[in-house]
Each structure stands twice: as C-alpha cells, then as structure tokens.
Length: 187
Image (spheres, rainbow, N blue to C red):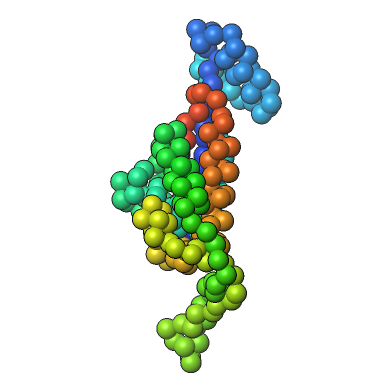
C-alpha cells in the first residue's frame, strides 16, 4: 500500500487519408505491430497509443505539486491532463531545489513501530543524509502528509525523488510533438 504516481503520454494516430501519407503509414504500422488487422474498424481508422513515461512511489512532494498546480487542490485518484509547460516548471523547480541545497550527515526516518508499549508509534532512525537547509525545499516543493504517503522529511529520499523526477521528466519531454500527458495517483 502507498502512494503510487504515474505520468502517461498518449498520442492519437489517424489512418484517414486526409491526415497525410506519413500518419497513415504510422497507423498501418501500429495495426500490424499490435495484431489488430482483423479487429480495427476500417471505417474509423484511428488509434490512441499510451505509455507510462514516469512513475514515482511515495514522492509526496511531487504529488503535492501535481495536486496544487494541476488538480486545482483536489487530491483524488482521477487522471488529469498536464501541459508540457507544467512539466517543465516542475522539472525546473526540482533542479532549483537540488542546486540550492546540499546533503549532510544526519539521521533519517526509516519507519515507525507500533506496539502495546508504543500505541502512538516509536519513530525509527538510522544514520543517513539530510538536507542541510530545507527552507528552499519547503518553499518550492513542500512535502505532503497523507495516509501511506511516506515520510515528510527533507532527507536523502526527498533528494533522490527530485533527481529521479528531473531524469524522468527530461525523458518524457523528449517526446516529439503530438503527445499529450496525464498524471494520475493511486493510494
């Protein structure tokens, strides 16, 4: 259980002649590739191709950004369209936080143990790395509390989520024109 987050890219491909020779070729290639010759309706030659281009697990600061700037503040598990400009903005924010902070030795939260002795939970800590000054991180990409959303510390896991986000969004933004993006969470 936990917060799972997906960014999907989809593209409409038409087999209608008026769309041009290149798109018709692409449509026919997809029909062959997916074994759809017998099943695709010849009267409406079109397809939508969809791929998951980014995935996060319990990156609650990234989810919080999508909730606030894409989903209008509504934290639910429905898909939401995301523009290229929004993805670039998120990538740039991640880079800015990474560039304006550093990791230093510290203790990181590794879990919470609940027992009869500790009914409210006993926090487990281990040596690791923490963000030395989390003010910029807290201002630009704050963490979000939620059921099974992971911890809200500004530590090595937060840092890795940002690096991972930059890499995934750079890859997704490398797609050519005609691709639409959609974010969806599951918790």
